[in-house]
Image 1: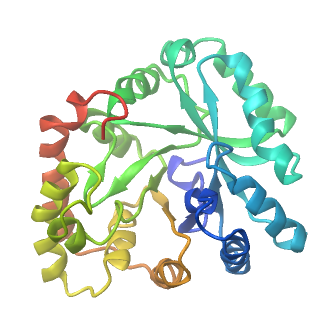
Image 2: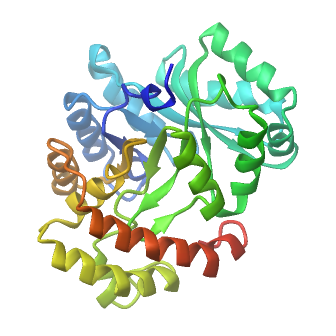
Length: 303
């Protein structure tokens, strides 16, 4: 099967459930948002680490089991013996017997094993054969890009890992330049996370404290004029179109608990048009520079 065909069934917009775990928001309101997304017939992205998001999802799923969506869930972490337990920590609370797509979040000895073609691949394959997880994508950050790159060049993930998942939006591209080029050359499927990079680019640029890190505010200063000159009215639409400007991007993952923001995501995904080539080139040129200046030099979890 062509690599570009893998993950072709994932909905172009995947609903991220991070905000469903926010206990400051009334529980019933969060259930209503989940039900709205279920009715839209799109995939969900979740994790047992997202507060009480799984409790919210369980209530929503139990209200109409026929509309339970396909799930992407984070699994890992530091050794292969943890893997099955983490899978069950995600599916058991939801009353499910399998995951459609497992997001491999690897660190420590397990990441080293992955990079060197170790026994973890046998376990991944066994889990697939059992139907516990149908497919895998590898989570990538700037500080883990070398792990992914070494494995990819060794050919180890072939037939086991079906794609790669990382932050990809106009302000962030969390694969190193070298890994990004490799993924492009190999036409590896990609799922883009954090669609809008934390909020409207003009707000990130202009409102003190709106960006959770200074680097995002500085990048917003550079990207906001590109957005403003594009003629696209919605930052959400601009970001969805940016992700899908790369043929290998199968989906973009965005999270919200606000019905009006959810509508923006759903509307943007109805008729996705890639951005003009000159806009994509302008942003990707910035991202190559940012990656060298900061991303690959950053300590883990500081971005």
